[in-house]
Image (cartoon, rainbow, N blue to C red; front, side):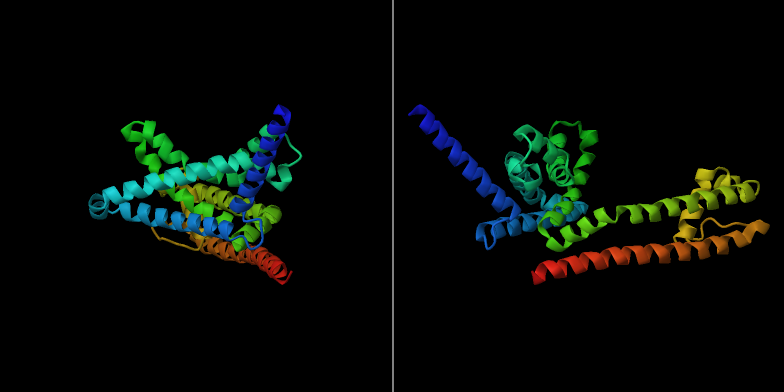
Length: 266
């Protein structure tokens, strides 16, 4: 009899955990509860972003301090509860079902989604115990914006494609970094005598290289020696690099859109 009751209780726990997983992940098709929870969390994230932005204005922050504190406390409770529930139901996540409960939960904690969920609550919990001079960590509440990726199918598809094409995107980054180092090193050699405060070291010259390759061209740092043509040459290379990188990024976006359309058709 005792074993029967324990088995019945265990079965109820498993069913509850499975149902909560469906609600949080909106896995059950047509689940009104899951849709309501998802939209509610999206709304709470948006309210948080608006509150954090408005609170940075001294007059607004002082006038509505109680309101902003209430929003933060409610958000802290909701996001903390969400994180705890997601940690509990991690064993129901399809890629983790063959792991032991502890292993599945550890993989959720270390996953990008788990880290984002943790960042949604960690700054405020740390601020409660941190000295006043370290309460600047509350600024990291804006990372709650990343939670929107969980509830947007389009953004999830885009992130999946970016993850799949990470080698091409990383290649763009490596080439840009390499071009920046080369341009900065050449300009350091050419201009260090005339402008030691701006090109005296390669790290100093990297500022010029970045804004030139990025075709921003602030004009605060310019070459003055006979190597002045290095500026236009570097800018032209920047146009080529940006054009190539843009082509790669658009190809990634096109794959994401195509995958989203295929899922919609299915």
